Image (cartoon, rainbow, N blue to C red; front, side):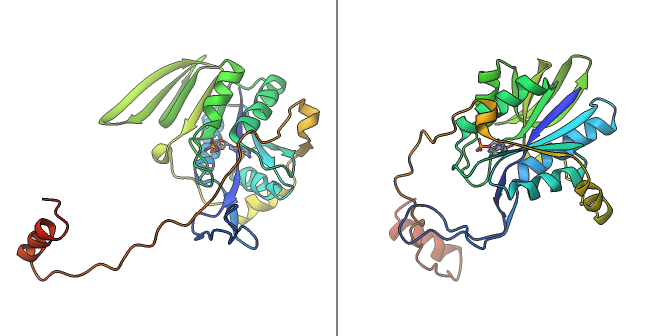
Length: 249
Ligand code: AMP
């Protein structure tokens, strides 16, 4: 069974992003970029499936600028076997990515596609669901456990107030939640090995996909600044402030 893992290059989660002065977006010039954390979990899960014998090949896919190659090399250092870069300078929105992935699903015929549940830059939480719809595949989102048995996957999902377990027929689309696994550290020998693994580059037009943006960002703004807090001497003073100043109790 082949597993496709889409990995997005995003601003590193440790970076405090700054809004551009003209309000058109956030400034990503000279900012550290990394693999979307949920995608690292997805790669780790796919590699574990291969190590358990449930998967035969793990293919990492990234859509975006040429530098996404670095993200793909990281995926291969974790253990993906090969990579595909769908290269474009166009700003990609979830629907465009889902269409590109659908074209690759048609071509590669994977048994499973494991995506992150959301990208930490756009926070869209849309691509996996759109891919499932376009490719007409069953989906199990926000996975905290994935077990493959024959031509089915049992997926445990974290939902409000507990856990839900779904069984889906393969091929299927699964998206990862934070607690699915803890990705391994990438070792130097594996980084060196990853440099020799195959990385194919295609363009959206090669896949017959129009990636023109359908959504327009009107304005990006910093959250309103919060006023400084005050320290209260005791519980009685806190209750008094909540009652008489904030008027919330
Ligand atoms: P989103 O719907 O944008 O929150 O992204 C959800 C997931 O879709 C991510 O965690 C990735 O697995 C995948 N994805 C989104 N954009 C891309 C991209 N440009 N290249 C590869 N995978 C992507």
